[in-house]
Picture 1: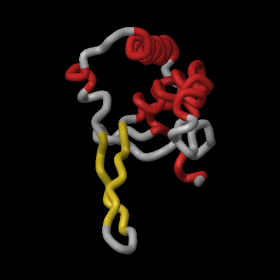
Picture 2: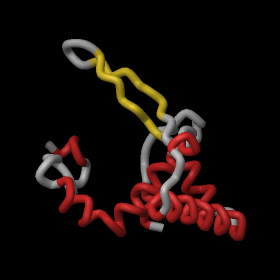
Picture 3: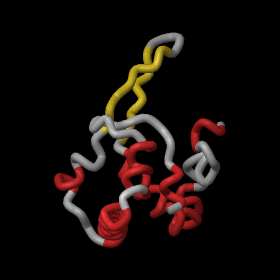
Picture 4: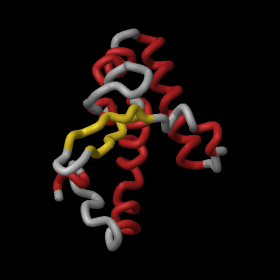
Length: 117
């Protein structure tokens, strides 16, 4: 449930974090089934070798241009289920990721990641 504290804009589907939170919490057994399905997807992605072609819709992003002087910087906004699943996986293996990436990633393990730098 902690992963449902995801905030933010919608990805390509147009369904934002608030709507996903409502879907996962407001419809009794249907919401429970949805949460179980999300957990199953996350478990499969984290524990098996998944064909990348099968993940194309899961990792799709909506690109938003940010006006940065000088020029424009693209920012990708992914789908909310991807963010929910990533947060759940990182709650379990986050310290291992920090240990592995720490020397190479300045903000590994910090809240807000690169925004904290």
